[in-house]
Image (cartoon, rainbow, N blue to C red; front, side, top):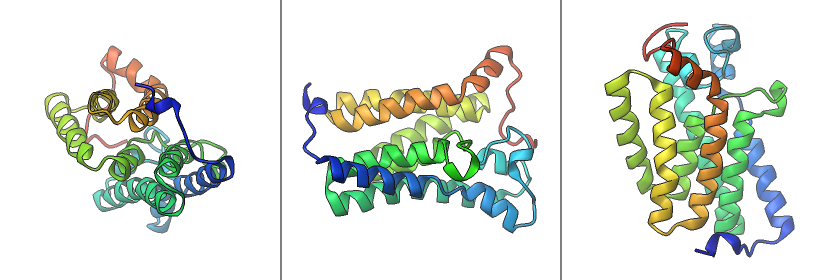
Length: 205
């Protein structure tokens, strides 16, 4: 129960991991891809976010899928690169920093996406087997409700609890912090879910 309180990484390596993770996470793939495809600024449609769900509102499914994969894999890359260079704790720190980078990219005035795809990518780097759990939960809730936001909220809530039960305390701590931030970033979605006005999967912006 005290594993998550004991960290062996040195401050310089922790800072290096933070910088590496943040820079990778802050790459705004949704914006870059839609602009390259001649679709303009994705921030001016739908929710105004740069993530895959909003890119899907352009009607271009291939771009949305590419955004999803790239936003996820930048999180995975941050974890694996820092882990390989500085150790497992560095991977945890870099993953968390990549998540913050996606949500608050310096290049876009600290206004980024909501982080679900990057969350999944970081989870893939830290605890690959849990991605299957996340996917099953997301797909089940999405099938029943047709709400992408609700699916993500439920999945991100379950994952840290499952990791803690399995004994991966440090990973659970990092994912729990990411879950709290994810729910905070989804506050407008939660309000719309309560009111019944949230957009359903497949609806264009």
